[in-house]
Amino acid sequence: MSENSSPPPVTPPYPTPVDPNNDTGDAILPDPLLESGSFIDADQNEAEPETPPNQQRQPIPEGEQGSGSGIASEPISVAAPADGSAGPTRPPMKRNLEEMAKRPDWLPENWTIDLRVRSSGATAGSIDRYYRDPSGKKFRSKNEVMHYLETGNKLKRKPNSDAEATPSESPGSKKQKKSSSKRKKSEALKFDFLNPPAAVSWTCTNAPQETWTARVDNKRVPESRQREWAAAFQHVTEPKGNEGTSN
DNA sequence: CAGTTCGGCCC
DNA sequence: GGGCCGAACTG
Image 1: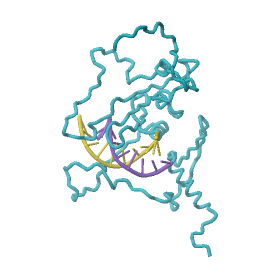
Image 2: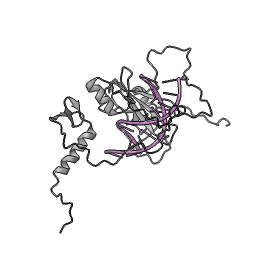
Image 3: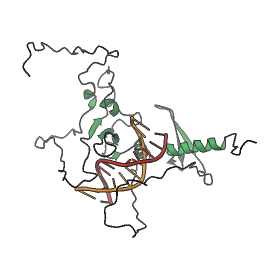
Image 4: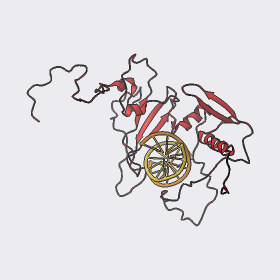
């Protein structure tokens, strides 16, 4: 493009937006979140100029299509700002990546959130949120974080006992990815009426929101279980249990 | 075997 | 639509 006749003289702190329909003053702020501490997984002590910023990515061999081949673009690490110490007046966050990366209230301050965008697969485009503790441990969900916070033990996944070896299946061959017939569903009331917990202790967390957590034998009861309990409770307290035809 | 990513259910 | 978790695949 050719040069313009009159270049912009001076850029004021806030460029005048040409957007006519901006009621909430959604102007383009310089970098509201940048200062808050949003950076790309750059360690604080990473003083290695020799290493280029490009992450070590293995070249994807064409032809061979693996699930792990097409990985997401870049893991976005967002450091959680300690608190409002950075700036007294915090500008309204725009709905952006930052907003998504804002730490939930239940997340400790020293933890970080990793946003990963799926680039391959049927669920491409979906954003997965991961949580990392100062130690570097990675968690996939709030539940895992909670469990780790309470018990201090990281949930181990995939026991993979492989107790039964089914020779019928063709071994050695690559296992089909779960294409179909994988998850079972449809299960009415999961509550085990025959083996109810002997004792349940309920604790209420007041901050930031009222959250009741049930514990059985010092083991935290998953919310899903609590929901099942609620469902069962409602079921047993249902006044009208007439399934027969009214007559 | 551990780590990483995708599929897909559940909410 | 997002969260969550199991499963699958790779290094």
